[in-house]
Image (cartoon, rainbow, N blue to C red):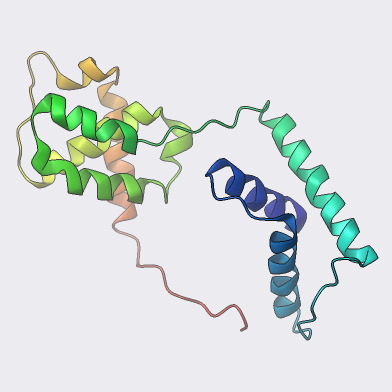
Length: 175
């Protein structure tokens, strides 16, 4: 599990255009393991046998992840749709709220359950409801953006549930 987690972090850093070196990921996960097991934190030598084994495991796990995902790694975020949708609907006053909701949606599973266009419509709809801004009903505005009402309602439901959860608390890693 630790190896796959490290590989996921490494791959995600590459996909989000913020790549990290394998050495950095290995060092962070090594330190976390030392802290978790109450061992003294030692510097890992980049030329040691343990480091080279960890690096090969990291590379091998990344390759398995990519195979499982059929090398489909392109992710569309809902953010790129929001400005266009709001401009089309002539409701620029919703931009900041919709953007904030889209950011918060990344804390949920919405990005893997729905197309980005549906999530974008959901956050626009939620922002409009919050500020009591009417959206066109005849014809339904979401049809112009290739979304369905059930998906939009589910996005709103998941976001509403997210806001009922207690705020995240900082937990020191060393404890």
